[in-house]
Image (cartoon, rainbow, N blue to C red):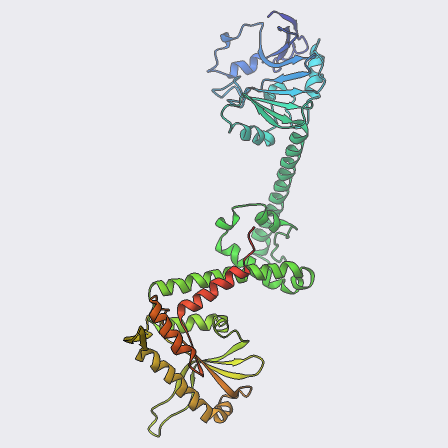
Amino acid sequence: MASRFISKQNEDDSSKGRFFIAQASDGWISVKYKYSADRMELAEHYNVSDLAPHEGTEILRINQDKDILTIFPLMTFPDRDDFLKPKYNRILTISLEGFSFENPQTPEDINDILESLPLGFIKDPEYGLGLQKEFRFIIHAIKNIEAINKLVITYLRSSTSIESDTYILDYRYFEAVRKSINRIHNEAVSAALKDKIILSHNALLTSLLPEKYPEKQRPYKQDTIFKAVLGASNVSSNISIKDKDATIKLLSDNMQDLAENHHQKLLELRHEIELVTLEQLIKKFESLLAHKQQNEDRWQRLFQDNPFILNLAFGLPIMIVQDLVSMGGLKFDGKGEKIADFLYSNGITDNITLIEIKTPTTELLGQKYRGGIFSPSTKLVGPVNQILDQRYHLQQNIAQLKINSRIYDLETYAIKCLVIIGTMPSDPDQKKSLELFRNNLNDVIIVTFDELLEKLKNLYKFLSPKQE
C-alpha cells in the first residue's frame, strides 16, 4: 500500500505530526499519522526504527461507498510502555456507520472529518482519538464481553446487538447513554464544588466566629432519596444503621403530610410494616416454642408487647388494661393475694376479661381413664380453678379496686376467663379428651400455644398479597 499524499502543513512545527493518506484495497482509504520527532524522542523505551521514516501509525480507515469510518484509538503518552498501542487493549477499533463521511483527498479533508466526529469523541490525533475520558466507561462496559474487540456505532441499524466479535450500538442509544453520563458527571462536579465551599466556610469561619458565620449545610436536592433507594435493587442489603434511623425519622417527621397528600401510599406502607412485624412475631413465637421455653415471664412479655395476639384468641375488640393485676383477697396476715397475668376489657362494652398464661410444656392430660378417655391433668385443672378464684375475688372487690386505681370504665357483667397453656396433643384420643373437657367449661376458654401460632400464620396468609 503506497502513500499517495504526505501532509506538508506542519513541516515548520516540530511539535506536531503529519497525516499520510494511502489507497488501500477494496475502496478503503487509510489515514496514518506520524507523530512529531519531539514526541518520539520522549519515548526512550520505544524503538523508533520500528517505523519507516516516511510512514506513520494508522489512525483512520474510510470507505465512502460502504459509509463506514473506522477509528484506531491509540495511547499517545510517550512515557508509557504501551505508547502507540491500542488505547483500550482488547477493543481495537471504533467504527461509525451511516455518518456520510467522504474519502479525504487533502489534510484539510482529514481535519474536517475529525471535527465532524460526534459529540463524545476525541478529535485531535495528538490525544489518540477514541472516546473522551468521561465516556470511557462505555468502552469498559463492552470490554466485559470477552469475545468483543470491535465497536460499531451505527445510524443504519435501529437496534443494539452483538455479531461475532463486534458490538453493534445504535447511535441514538449511544447518545442517550452519553448524555446520561455527562449529566451525572456535571452533577457530581457541581456537588463537589458546593461541598468544598461549605467545608471551607465551616472550617475557617464557623469554627472561629459561629454567631457571625453560622454553620452551613449542603441543601437537600429533590429526588435524592428516590435515586438512592429505588434506583438501586440491592440497597436494602447494604443500607447502614444510620441510614435506617434517618429514614424512620424522615417518615415520622412527615407523617402528617403523607396522610394528607399520599394517603394510599401511607396505607400501603402501613400494610407492609404490619406484614413484616407479623412475620417477625411468628418467627419469635416459633423459636420460643421450638426451644420449649418454660419461663412464663418470657411469654408474658411477648403477649404484652403484642396484645393483638390475645385479640385473636377471643375474636373480640379487647384492649389491655394492666398486667400482673391484684384481684384483692388479702388475709388479715397479709397473705393470699390473688394475681392475674393480664386484665383486659372489651373496647365496646368495657366488660372485663382475665387471662392466665402458663407454658407450652405444661401437661394437659393425665392418666388414661378407660375407653380411650384421658382425664385432665392437675396442671390444667389447677390454672382453671385459679382463674375462677381470681374472677370471684375481682367481683368481690371491683368497686374498691376501681376507686384505688382510678380506672372507672370497667364492668363485671360477665367476666370472661382465658387460659393459654400447653400444646395440642398428637394422639387422637387425647385430642378428643381435651376437646370434651374444654368445650364443656362454661366460663373458661382454654387455648394452646400452637393454636395461637396457627392463628397468626393464617392471619399472615390472609394479609399477604394473593399469588396467581
